[in-house]
Image (cartoon, rainbow, N blue to C red):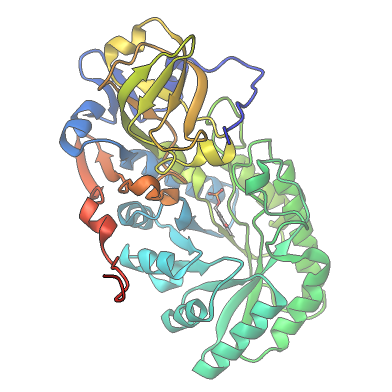
Length: 445
Ligand SMILES: *Cc1c(COP(=O)(O)O)cnc(C)c1O
């Protein structure tokens, strides 16, 4: 199935607009497009393509501005980076240095966060289907908090904690039935979604959790969706509903020490105008500010999305009839968002000449054998002859972390830049590694 071309009612931002809004990028008239002070052409030469390139300075700056916004609003808050958006150890480690913990959704992410240096007491475990093995590991590691998504999971955790002689600090994930007005595939706060428990059921469930052996209920958690980019309305409603629920639970005599406010803050991929950290902090304060609860936040995309680009090389330009296809060496197995969510990513050429050359509409596609392996349609681009370099912008979140090896394509390399230095933080997967662990059945001749 071909990805439908999204319809926008505004012209695409120009190369100049894209660049101006992204402080980590600069166009040098000789070296071409740079991340911080490192020319992308140099990274392509040394590391090859496709390659993910992350700006450490951008990660730091964004972590700091979120911390500052919460502090300025007078909130007692901790931030737990949603590891699923970018689980690279170097990224999680850098954010830990900036004072962030981690929000994990699997054993693999829990292990990655620990390997990146995040202490167990900085880790929150979310997710609608944690296995017994995962719950046991979380308890053995004594992580900060387990976010419970159902009555059934509370019973399961209680039984496991009791059998291990442990107490499980847990929060109840509430589904506040608000529409985050984001893409249907990334909205999570409606009753029809699989996440959390309906808010009407929360008082009875929380009371039950308080009565279950081995559980220490510490509060509530909510996450209404991702890439929330239509103002603060959905957040305000969700946090107000949570605030009312906190009061109700307390008046029933239950302890509520924390509210985990989830993630979801959107970023401008094209010309969206999502709320700022200050606006988010304001919504939290409005709904929960006078309850004396400790606030937690689980941002992913907002922190790391704008910090990364996917660097790719043109294989060939093909011009059948009147169409123009730019075929690049990155594909949907690397950056899945366009195929999966019809997502729009800015594209910038790397060469300074291409940056100022005349434009004509082109479809940019990968080599994978699917029509949905299309990054964009009818984008105004300069001539991009074979071997030209270009970048997909804002690819630092849900980029590498959603990659697959479809079409037996090895996972791309990952690079971190800071100032004029760069380091490979993950090697390009080898073809040998792709075949590793496979064998023929012993009855094959
Ligand atoms: C995915 C997720 C997040 C992070 O979402 P972003 O949109 O990347 O901020 C936070 N909390 C939970 C429970 C999630 O599932």
